[in-house]
Amino acid sequence: EVQLLESGGGLVQPGGSLRLSCAASEFTFNNYAMNWVRQAPGKGLEWVSAISGSGGSTYYADSAKGRFTISRDNSKNTLYLQMNSLRAEDTAVYYCARGEFVVPAAMGGMVVWGQGTTVTVSS
Amino acid sequence: QSVLTQPPSVSAAPGQKVTISCSGSSSNIGNNYVSWFQQLPGTAPKLLIYDNDERPSGIPDRFSGSKSGTSATLGITGLQTGDEADYYCGTCDNSLGAGHWVFGGGTKLTVL
Image (tube, rainbow over all chains, first blue to last red; front, side, top):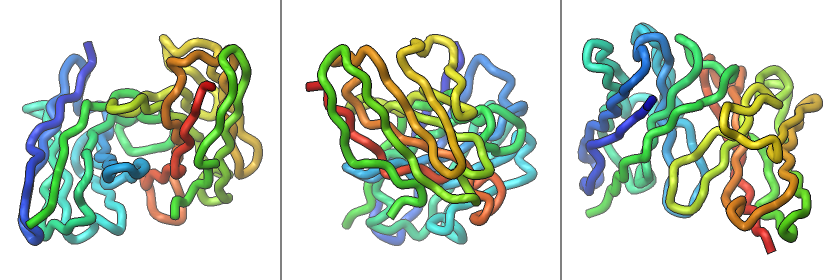
């Protein structure tokens, strides 16, 4: 079964760092762009970042630019999100989601989603 | 304030039909494919509709999508209590950069 499994969430103080991971299984990982989407408590979905299948191209929402770094290790079928200088407003459930092409695009949607990992930024 | 505009809530009785609108602009819906996602309480989003009107395998034909200009619509017929969920539209926005997704604020569906 095609699956994504996030990990790495937790409680961190403002200004701290955290690295999220997303392990992919049962599909050819490097054929697909990957996304991070977050959802603050009681709020809607917010796209955070995306990366092409090769990892050569990365894309960020303004809220993540300069603080977050998306990366992938195709040999390990794993997606990462390094989050630095965390703020209270970064508190959210973070989902990884697969695009349907090697570059991020609206076409095809986001078919596969992980179950999410919770990040809480608080002192 | 979300880039795409959805009504906060809609409601209808079991067996009835409901539509959820999603309004955008030429930089997003007007020039990109639209997806719709269902999020049941406490679960991850699930793709219902992609490329404006296509259903992934396993999604019943009670769910339909359409797009006209800078707006899109999700339709659900034969409403069931299990359809109670939050629904989100999403697409890419060319003015924000390549591959930059935007979502609507979400619509809470209540099946009375």
